[in-house]
Image 1 (tube, rainbow, N blue to C red):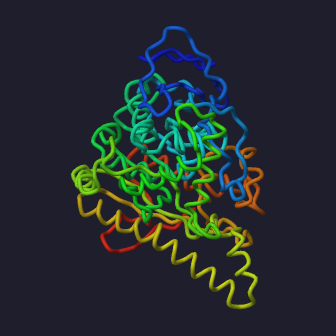
Image 2: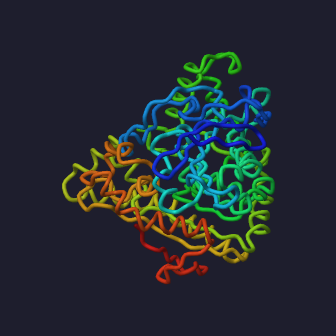
Image 3: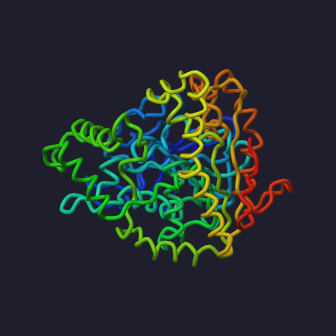
Length: 444
């Protein structure tokens, strides 16, 4: 059993096959619609052998692509991290990867078995910290007199500060922290690059499939979303049951998605000019100021939109139109991917490079030619995280077995581990980004 004593407390975890895991470590508490407050230090040894609760949420719309995570209890008391480290690691000896999950700011958790980091840690010798943060209206609603907004972003930054102050005891080096994320988690990482409080907690970043073409909200857009939500709730958000909040949130998302639900953009996003995110111009200036010497991996998958449009009823119907249908759908998907994912990623890579960052770009391609989802949004996740059992029913992997996917992902895990350890990639076929090149290293 992995017994750890850190400045903020003591925990008992589980050690197996060369890896020690501590689940559900609380880094903060927060009342509904209030800012997170760091958890006071405790003296008793807390059991950290099983996952803690996840943020209140409805099933992810991408379960039809990824498969479903193992069920876990839900609670507003969800501000926890899971720490996975090499067994017996000396204090402060290993570089750290902090993982921010995706899920359109509506679903997901660092406690999910899909994000278990045992294999990644075993193969690379790094420490991985998976973060849980508030979602949906509880994390991102901006409504005067109810919620200030950006609470989920504040949760993430508070977790990074917990890592800075405590990770040494788990074997991690607080001076060598890489913050990483996928989808909404990756967009959160990008936000942090322009937030000085966050920027002080890490030295490197990995940005996977960030929808940068969907900009953070301004106050007007945030208020419009809040108005729709409050109209759907028809009650006091402070007193409403979680089930009622989630139901109103779901109705809000459906209304904002428009006719035939063609707008797949998240209804709730971080908001500019709301603590801790500066106004847009000030945020970009801060990104540029902090870029010199920063090391970044940034990229997308080749078929991001297949995850959203692959089984969409409208696009499925259009595909059935002989000859022209499949071409039309493919064209729409390519256009949206270029606008939401590819072009904005290239522009952000250019911005960072011009400001002095060391940037490498990547693109994940399909794992098997017969899978209809291709290299869809989330396709790289089983290459990095989870176990064979966790990904056994993932439609995006068929006809590959999870073991096949894990074997295919060995090179990706090696790259990620090497980057976290050294800030570099030794493979000379993966060049540093040059402004305007649009070049992306092919993975896996």
